[in-house]
Image (tube, rainbow, N blue to C red; front, top):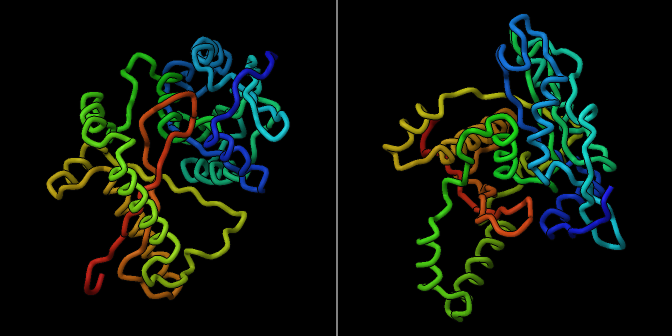
Length: 304
């Protein structure tokens, strides 16, 4: 193992420290595979072939070759060679898609080994008829959602153009914004400060939204449910209403909150402040480059 050469970025270290506070800060990316490639027509998976292909691609992904080591009060990345016998492996079969959902729920509460790179790819037989499931588990200290999407693409579909946040402005737009609102402009600084204070006030006090079951203590049990839809069809339906795919996701989440409140016998507030992570412009070496957007999840007036 090489000596520590790079200190964790503050956002990445904060996500790592959460594990020490008793929270498993690992998220999952799950997929269903049909026969082809390392999966034979009879559903037999050639894990050795999968490791051989991914070995070359992992060599081009520094994020998957690092171990977090503590030195004093800070953490540093040590570069190492991952043991693919451990990191890419088959697990016990499941019974269909429901079984895969249950397996993912179990994995949400299982930490990753701290003496290895903080990721693993699990091949799950039985997730579909004649196919299988693949689950990438990666620690939040290594990647946020956008970084993980890029990692998945470079592992399994490297020939396609890399994904990028849809809300990222062009370089020209960034330059124009920089000229219009220089960072050392006192008025711009005051505006940013005022916006920050407003967001904190909305988060802490919520404008009269009372305590609900949604704010109750979280249990150790997790549930995972897959939702399958055609992105193109969803976008086509959302665009005429001035909405995006992300807006549709937020609306579906609001409907879920409403259903949970009704099931608990609690009143449904007219609106509920929701904290949504948003991707920021990629800078430096941090795996986590996200901000927070507060949105008001509202319900329509009248029944339903």
